[in-house]
Image (cartoon, rainbow, N blue to C red; front, side, top):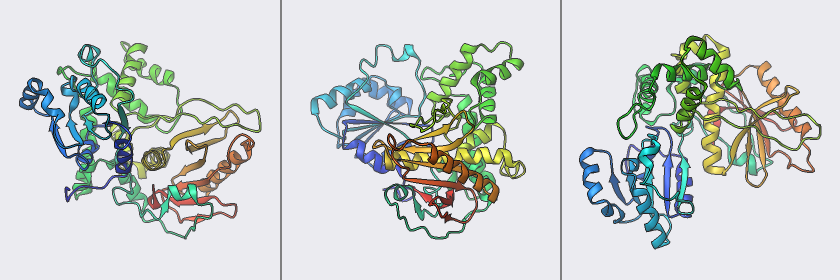
Length: 427
């Protein structure tokens, strides 16, 4: 065990997947810790990360199927043929937890895949998307409020906690992001460079054949910048396209959509879909997605935003803070609760930032507010209105309602709604 390893919440999810499938593919952004975490489970490791190794294993590929299980194949996409070999091996052995595949998430062109992967792997492979670290994993949340506990315990004992972080701290967490390497850097100014370096690397991503993934990096960057300007909103993609095209006449709608898809394939953009519950009224729910990055630091890097910028622009700060909270909620809900995050918007103007839904129909609703009594009260009002609209003959009662803040005291209202800072939450 690596003494410098930072424990990740995803570990419990990896265990469940290894106990239920022959091979596990861990995907996600580069430098998020996929390989490091996978090594905590692997007993044998093969890395296709250097030309000499790749050349050797291409000739002796079957050797990578031998060894103590689980076997980790790192940078597997550099030898695509391994995918089908593992599928066949899993079929033959009919055992669980034999292989783990990780990679640097470099998307592949169709001509590179053709003739090398002959089967989807359905039924043999399971998949996990790994996110950057939550504040609890980076030891910046006290973790004295459990999301799981909010779901299962209607009488959750809720103490008065003061916010352990300042607004300055929250602004820093946003701009630094949840990249594991950044925690090894003592000086805050230096740690902020990690996300900026990664942002530059995204725009210069290359395929397995050394081609630029984005042929026009200026257009690619303009798309990321426009997305960052509309983070935590349901802004129209058509309007984004038109705004970029005004300054870049050669941009086509096809290219715009192609680049958006590529950013999603790189696990950089991660929108959340709408929740459509059964309502008592005939109010129509809106179906637009809310735009988010996989980590708020990438949006900050796109706009060249620093912590001091956020502190001087509270409107932008609020939107970026929402992006941060959504990242943490993804980690806590997906890995520990088998739950998904959606949002609620309807044509009456009611909005709720996050609705966590479980497979058994349980749900909890969350409003995200940076802080301030007026904003918190607005969040409480939205949650009460949503609760009143639900048709409880067809939907379960909410397991909990909560307002998550950046800075505030934690408390429970008389009608049972929780209010607490994100730096008190864990899975």
